[in-house]
Image (cartoon, rainbow, N blue to C red):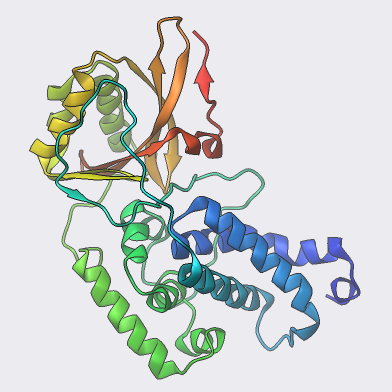
Length: 329
């Protein structure tokens, strides 16, 4: 600490490096965007470097960094102009009418592995939400529909397990205000059926059960077998494709959307990865010259031995997962 305060940048890096991953994940939960989270993390570290002389050490440096990161994210949520929606861009394919137009179109996936960053995030004794659930696409999407301060309180209290008085100090407010915001945030998540829902859980990551479902999905998808795909879907299955606003809900609507793509005869090759603690696949379109061009990323939300949601992202996200823009023949 003394060396960092004297201007030693390497000492500052040693102080903050253990917290980079968890701070980036925290910013992602707050903002719903991998790119915005990276920007917020850099802003946090710069502010910490510039403000190190004012750090009183009353709280741990981890808590102090969370305070700075939360403030940066709240400012970003207030001031950011959300990214515009995009247009349907699949040539010679007219999609069916969507069930509805989504509001959280700036959502981006978060890779399970970021090179050079540790995935071990310590949780406080009051954490209520499991880490895998707290990074899931459904959870992060629901957070974006809550007011920013409610998001901050819920993440700090229920996900990270900070105490109410710690959160009150971080956010420069009262414990009563923190408890009130937390109550409203929990009610908002219950509205999205994310808290207190009696539902069959997803199979454990890497388990035989998960591998069985994903293997069937790959076979159906790569063979344009819509019947086999539909057999894997829950009745309330959901498909979205940010930053495109189209959303399809229910087995018939989702089957109608994917069959539109399958019926073109386009051949897709899938490359497995993981996003948001969920199975994911880079999608590559076979070209006549044998090259397979990256077209996007599909993330699966599983429930038991079925697929509850399929979220498609465009090809710009592939490099975040170490996936190439194209594959050779």
